[in-house]
Image (cartoon, rainbow, N blue to C red):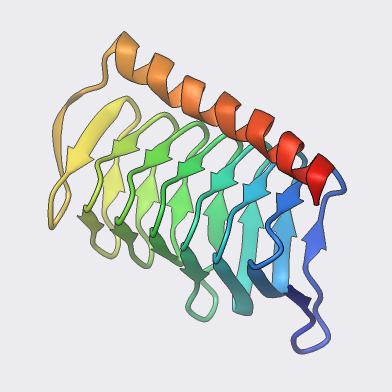
Length: 169
């Protein structure tokens, strides 16, 4: 369901996939090959939300923001199941593990990985090429080539799956 809010209507690229039970309102931009999965809620009713090309926002996610603090998900990012993102920046080809929470002003740099169930507090930066884990999230190690390959595999699988779902809905 896509709703206008305060005279702002979400802009969804024709080659993006939005599950029929996702809810998207207000100032939201979803780029080519991005996918928004089942029961996800994206409210662009406070500040803008931008979801980059090829990014995937998996089932049951909640995306929102604070005044003057947009939520930005860059190209190729993976947002796992039941993630909450609030006024943060998620870098290109990064991965946010399922059940994680990333709060206002946090920055997940390009190619970083936040492990499942983590809490990234306001203003925290997770550097490129690092795995962060915990509550609060702390960098625990460098990512390996196998980690990067797995992140790429997930990203490509979601693009493929989204095209299959789009054809059948």
